[in-house]
Image 1 (cartoon, rainbow, N blue to C red):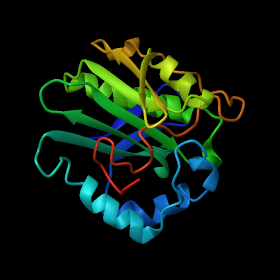
Image 2: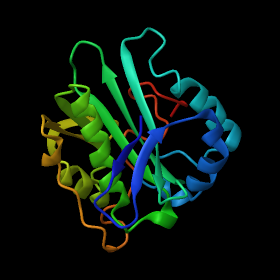
Image 3: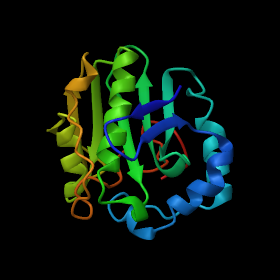
Length: 206
């Protein structure tokens, strides 16, 4: 299923991750500055092929988690510019979300728009609470979380602060930024779980 934000002149959509996205996404994720707060390093095409082969299953091996992994695509050409992901645990625990936009596309509000589309998709799946883990110095990601209505908690996991919020229909309650370019990094940054992290279980080891 494809989710599209039609509010801006340059349409931004989410579509399901495919293994053959590996080459394009290796380019999107190639800038080492993406990993300043999350750790790790730019993945190779082979790294992403292995990671995506797991993630595209859509669930953990024991089926206690459902995984959403979507590529963020831009414009009529459907250019990949990043990704969003969510892990939905069995039993009603909060879904953990993450978002990453490649450096060349940052500063334009795309991360906030993509994250809001992800939250709307979770509402349709009847998820009622979301969390994200954000480095305490990562102001850009904190601003995106705030746009989603999330608040920081006292919980710290691996040096990252847990943010959370209850979500409910109508999904339009999520605050979408306008499409005007912004100061670099205000709306676009990697956040939530680390790219490809194993918290809560969707990819390469940390």
